[in-house]
Amino acid sequence: MKLAVVGTGHVGLVTCGSMARFGHEVVGTDTDTTKIELLNAGEMPFFEPGLPELIEEGVREGRLSFTDEIETAIKGAAAVFICVGTPPRASGEANLAAVEESSRTAIRHATGPLLIVEKSTVPAGTAHRIKRTVRLERPEIADDVDIVSNPEFLREGKGVEDALNPDRILVGAESDRAFSTMREIYKPLLDRGIPLFETNIPTAEMAKHASNAFLSLKISFANAIARMCERADADVVDVANVMGADERIGRQFLNAGLGYGGSCFSKDLLAFGRLATRLGYDFPILDEIARINDETAVSVIDKVRDALWNMDDKRVAILGLAFKPDTDDIRFAPALTVARGLLDEGANVVGYDPQASANSKAELPDLEIAQDAYSACEGAHCLVLATEWQEFKELDLERIRREMRYPVVIDGRNLFDPVEMSRLGFTYYPTGRPQIPANDS
Ligand code: UGA
Picture 1 (cartoon, rainbow, N blue to C red):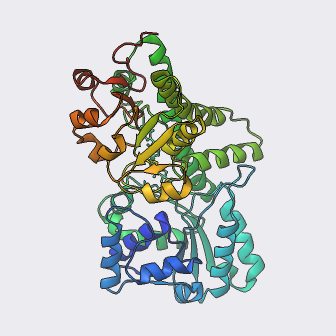
Picture 2 (cartoon, rainbow, N blue to C red; picture 1 turned 90 degrees about the horizontal axis):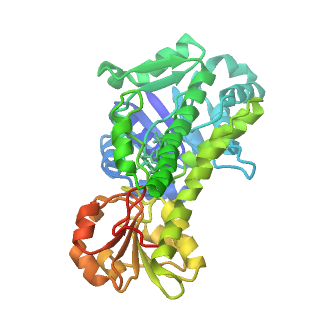
Picture 3 (cartoon, rainbow, N blue to C red; picture 1 turned 60 degrees about the horizontal axis):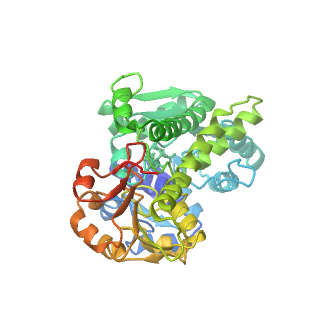
C-alpha cells in the first residue's frame, strides 16, 4: 500500500521505518527542509537506537523515501499519517495548528480516496475538526476521505522495538472502509496475534491521553511515597516491590526518582486537564500529578544543600542529562531543572551524558560539559546521578570516589546499591530510602 507520513520526529520516523518494514511503499515529508536533507543524505536528525538501521533498510530496499514536498508524498497514497508536533500553548491546550495545516495540505493534494490518520497525541474531538476541514476545503471529495485515530504508544529510546512489537494497536474510526484499510496496513502485526482495539474516534483519542496520564500518575504516586519514606525511615524500593507484586497494581512505572521528563507526559497532562475543563469536568488530580513531579527536582537540590552547606564555589557533577536513558532528548529533562537550580544558587555545575551533552550545552550555556563520567567527577564536592544510563551502572565507583573532592553521592534514580556505597565510604543520599550514613542533623 502507498502511505505518506507527515512529520519526521520520533513518531514520524519510526512510523516511516516500521511501515516500510511491513512491506508498504512509504514517503516521509516534513516542512523542515534541513531534516529532509539530512535524511536524504543518510543521516539521522536525532539519536534513537535501531532507527538508522531501520530507515536505511527501507531506503535500500526501495520502499522508503523522503521529500519536502507534501504533494509528492500524498500523490497516490491510500493513507496519510499525521505525526506532527502538538506543543503546549501558554494556556496548556495542545497547539493543533500543525495538525490542521498538515491535514489541510493533505486534503488539497489528495488524488483519490484517502485515510487521514492521526498519530500525534491530540485531544478528543480533533478528528471531528479535521473532518470539518475536509468538508470546507474540498466538499466534493468529503465522502472519499475517512479520519482515523491511531495513537502511537512508543517510548523514546525503545521506539523501534515498540513499533515492531507493540502491546496493542488502537484504531478509532467510523466506517468499515476505514477499519478494513487499517487492518490491511497492520496485517503483518495482526498475523502475529498483536491485539487490535477498534473503537469510535473519541474513545481512541481519549485512551491515549488517559494512558499517558495514568503512567505519570503512577510515577508521581511513587515519588510522593518516596517523600514519606524519607521522613519515616522506610524504603520506597521495597514498598514498590511489595505493591508491584499485586497484579492489580503492577511493578512498572513505580520507580521513584527525579520524576518524569520528556515531551509527552508534561504536555499531555496539561492538555488533558484543559480538555477536562472544556468538557466541564473538574479533574484536580491531574494538577496534583504535575505538582508532585515538580517537587522531585526541589528535593534533590535540597539534598545537595544539606550535604554541601553553602553552594558558592562548590562543584557539583551531574551524570545523565537526557530526560531518560537511550535518547539525546532533553525536553523537560529533570537533570536540567536540577542543573539550573544549582547554577542559580551559585554552584559550578559540570554535566556528562553519553548522547545529550551537546543539546544540554546549547540549552544551558553555563553548564560545563565533561567528556566522560570520571572527568565530570574530578574535584567535585558532590555527584548527582540524574539519568540511569547503562554505562553508569558499570562505573568504577572506587575511581569515582578518588576523583571527587568530597565523597557525596545523591542518587536521583536509585541506581547504586546502598550497601556497596556505604562500603566504599560514600555519604549516600538515595531517593526514598534510608540515607547512609544516617542523617546526623
Ligand atoms: C511515554 C509513554 O511511555 C509512551 O507509551 C508514549 O507513547 C509516549 O510517552 C508518548 O506519548 O509519545 P516516553 O516519554 O518516551 O514515553 O518515555 P517513558 O519511558 O514513558 O518515560 C517518561 C519519563 O518517566 C522519563 O523521564 C522516565 O525517567 C520517567 N519514569 C519512568 C520515572 O521517573 N519512573 C518510572 O517508574 C518510569
